Image (cartoon, rainbow, N blue to C red; front, side, top):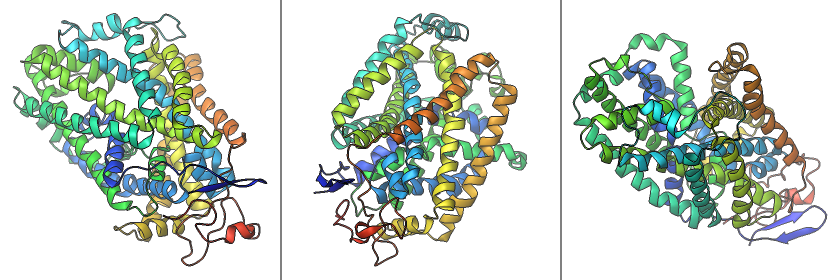
Length: 546
């Protein structure tokens, strides 16, 4: 039984921490988190626009030098300090708790609009059976379906979006309420295999369409000159970074549910390469179908518009479905896959929020899922089921991802590895429990290369947004929804970090001890202030080493 002390009151007994049922359950859930909407609608377009087949070179370099190393950093923090992002960071150093809440609030914001996209996919899954978008998919999506208005604040709700959005929230709350093993893991065990099978069928079907070869040639024909463009390399790091679900609390939280003696690095490699494999599979399927559309229209693939993002999914693909043999079945497969990919990622995003509040305020999984779910659902419906929902979604996503998540990654690397110098301890932890051992190169990658690349991405994006704005939206709107999102995340993180814990997480000793053979000082304590609690062997303070 694990015990956690509350300052001044002595240790209090609490329930053992939830855990995955085993390594397979963890791997499936982690892959389900990584494989999301961006794999299907972002990677093919990014690859095509940045050198085609040649893009795979910087993509692989980015995976090996940033994606996997930061994934391991998340695993090490979550597994060693046994908690959600706020708990884990606080146990590294007390004042670092606010960084954990920063990550939690990023996830909270992303979940609000991510559910809306899943609701769109569910709607279009139903629309596929009678090809309801007709001969004008663009007009149907923005007009009939979303009833899109100009940028602003609207209270005019769109029933066709509101109803599926509420349904998505009800299902999500029910799954999270069941807990980690019985809820999140079981959902991934069902939906991830279904997703893979459905998408494989879709890809195989797309390869036999007329024009498919032209589409694949457009995607994979290498433009080696592109490798000399720094922006192509930045695009590769950006794609890897966003597609692996790293640096904003998800993998910290997921790793904290693994048993004490659990292999981390080898499953991490499986997750990373599975995610990249699915991205390449998505690229094949998407561009084979784009080749068919170009063939039908008598144009080159390069002349097509809408080859990435929501327009690809909800305008271009419906146009393809309308023209191909067996279109309704193909459409149902595509939008069903999109909904399942989004749902498994959504569960991981919301689990970060749920875990943080459970540990801070002593809530049960059911209490956290219902309380947070209802509040989130109300905000989500109010913002994203109205006539301005698409514009609000696009704006919030731009700032939450390109500013919030990237800033989180830079802060995590700099504070944990540069300021607090915990790199050797975290590497020791990974090597002690894992079969694939890391050398000093890992610390160089996560402490030097990653912050430099991500820092450049962050600064360049901030400058661009400040100077050029975004999509021609009014400045007041970008200040309210874009920069307002960042301000909300920062303020909420500081407020939550300042609030009192129901049970203090500070009476905790990481296992295994570091340096080897010595007890680790308590989180947030200095060597001279650790007291007797800091010198107790692992298992007598904090959680027992199982």
